[in-house]
Every structure is written in C-alpha cells, then in structure tokens.
Image (tube, rainbow, N blue to C red; front, top):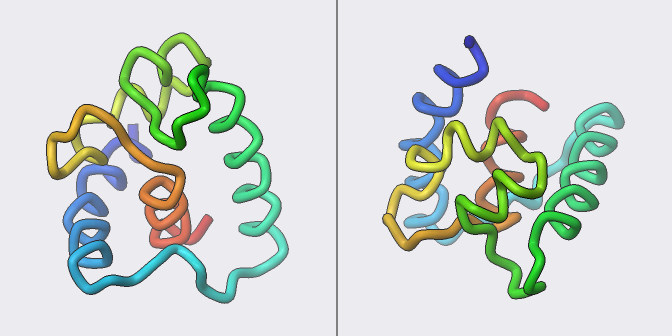
Length: 96
C-alpha cells in the first residue's frame, strides 16, 4: 500500500508540475525509461477510444488497477480522465 500513499503525496507535486507548465520529459535512468515504455504500451492498450485520455472505466477494464485505485488523486482537476503525461510525471517523481 506504500504505492498508494506515494500516489497521494505526489498528486500535489503533479499539480505543481502541470501549473508550472512542466512535463514528464526529464532525464531518466535506463530502468525508469523501461518502465515508461511499458507504461506507454499499457496506456495505449487501455485507452480504447484512442483519445489520449484514460477514464476510470478504461483504467479498470484495461487492467491498470494501480491507476484506477489512485485515479481521484491523479485527476487533481477532476476532469474525469488522466493523461499519459500525468502518469509519467508521477512515475518519474516516485523515482521509477
């Protein structure tokens, strides 16, 4: 459950990145890059309508249970979806 707590604590950091106009594009190590690549693949597979947005339902149905469990903390603006960049930023913030 540490992962959930990290999602919660990083939600504010993610919001700050978004407000500052930052992106998830940072220098990352090989291990983190591999995780980002896997995340992109899983995100695209779960994003059934290919709109670049993952709804809670898509996350659940697409097998992205950690994203679904922490959805309300990632979707800080309460838009009803999360983007790949938001999830990437969180992954990078958590050190991979």
